[in-house]
Amino acid sequence: MRALGLMADDATIPPAKVRKYFQINHMVALLGPALRELRASPVIRLLDAGCGRSYLTLLLAWCARHVWHQPLEVLGVDRDPELIGEARRRTELAELDDVVRYEVGDIATMRPSGVNGVVALHACDTATCDAIALGIELDAEMIAVAPCCQAELARGWASLAERGVDGAFATVWRTPHLRRETAADVTDAMRVELMRAAGYEVAAMEFVPAEHTRKNTLLRAIRRGGQDPSARAAYEALRDATGGIDIALARRQASHQASD
Image (cartoon, rainbow, N blue to C red):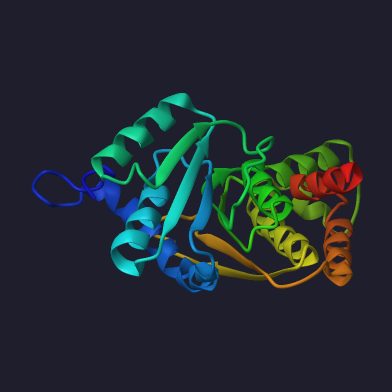
């Protein structure tokens, strides 16, 4: 807790840190069933996409060692060198640097090998799509993301409104507050269908009460089989019904399939 910067020297958790404390603990609790399914692997290898200051990264590694007694290795990736430097400092303080390592990089272009699961806590806007797409491309058994700042679809809808495009969803497009709030939920619904289309069983759930963060949706996916064309059709129907704007995950999947 001290290594993470959540606990003060007098063993109290400052009010400003309570929200992060609840976020990471609730997310790890909800990931428990999915992580248990990965224990057939001698060592579970996770990628934390957009790891930031490593709150989730370190908690997963600590739980694996001290609670689950499961060999686990975590690679944390972020584009910000300063955040990666702070994450490495915290990891050394927590004495977990033998199982946690970090790289400065862009998850949109990474291709690590041997990854069992991909996690992302509040990767901003299309970075969540990048994390999901990477998990699918790596054939990861588990993908778990808590999306944040889903602004891409809202920008697309704003463009429709500016061009005077009419349609059943036009009231939402033209109303900034409704456009912003609705786009977040529709984006996550689209992500659910696209992961299902790729062969994953997906659950969308609240992972922490709203008073701790408004961005409190967890999308948890477990790979179960082959592609599901009906889920892809459901995505396309939802996209067309709401204005015809593709999200980044759909474009990345299409690009990946074209390159194959």
